Length: 487
Image 1 (cartoon, one colour):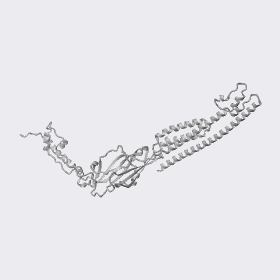
Image 2 (tube, rainbow, N blue to C red):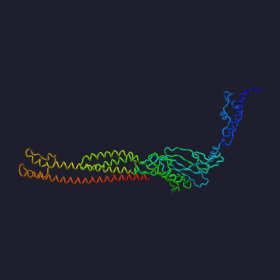
Image 3 (cartoon, rainbow, N blue to C red):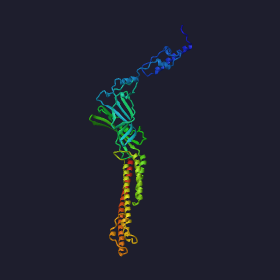
Image 4 (spheres, one colour):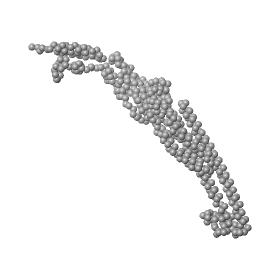
């Protein structure tokens, strides 16, 4: 006795069998590989359903049936191509059939950003896009044999790569490690990666903040000579010089150009090829003009105006001392913003130091002048009382002028001519003392006038020197600004 199956079950089985063959034909039409898949019939579906745990009458989905009955594709074209290229490849051997032929490496550099300019340590930190291209004669294939695949990516660690280094390199910082390169069917390999390069550079800060820096990145082979590895440009020099499309132009530094040159160097190991990229950058000076140059010029003008005060005025010393304190505070704040370099000093710092020296000399001259006038005034007030008090004090006891002046020597004419009061000689000696005092006072006045004229002439000379230095400072800054704008 055969089991009787319901008409609906028979219809469902027939429909499932029809759908299965339809879906199988669709999948087979969409497969990219050359091998075909084996397809099982409706009885295989029934057997698979019976072998699964659970309800034996539960119908199977199309996805489950495909997963169980369809085998995985074997030997796809990409897998076969990779195996074909790397199975007998030796990465330690330079990829040429004729060992006398050099491998040419084509280089290109795109400056992405200027990250830091360290003038104190003479280092430049840049972010660049580095491109190198070379031909590998052992990594070529016929695309028609591998489903028209014309380009694939391979691990860089599995193939030969040129030993290109940067001679000015100090350190790599945050450079991502990209493990793959692109290889096309003719054997051309393209290796592109971003690099953060910290390189040594001779930075000149003399024209700060209108300075222009020129730093070089020299690429060469670490070991191979030009007969083994040669270097060439990937693009024309004109295209590379003014290419700024990748540069982030929002920092303190502006990229002017990236010129390049190719050289053959002689060494003990032989001739070697090198390519130099000269990165020319300039600083944007507006923030330093506002925060440093304009306040320094105002401070110098205030100091220059102090020369219009009278040289004998003691308030001039107080004013110049206040200006000196302002110079000192501004110098401390300016030292934090100016670049530090042991080889050169910014021009603004040199001018500021010269103006500060002029201020100190002028202040010292004013102190000497006040001190000299004070001594002359004190001596002129004491001299007329020496003899008059010791000779004319007839009503009271005679006082000794030496005791009054605490050890001061009595004038010579007072010591030689001591007379009795009330006589004609007393009158004559008093008149002679008065005449001698006026003569001495007149001589002191003439000496004071002479010293004042000399100090005023020196003060005028300081003023002229100060004005010349300030004018040179302004002209130099304007010239540097014009050269910066023209570059």
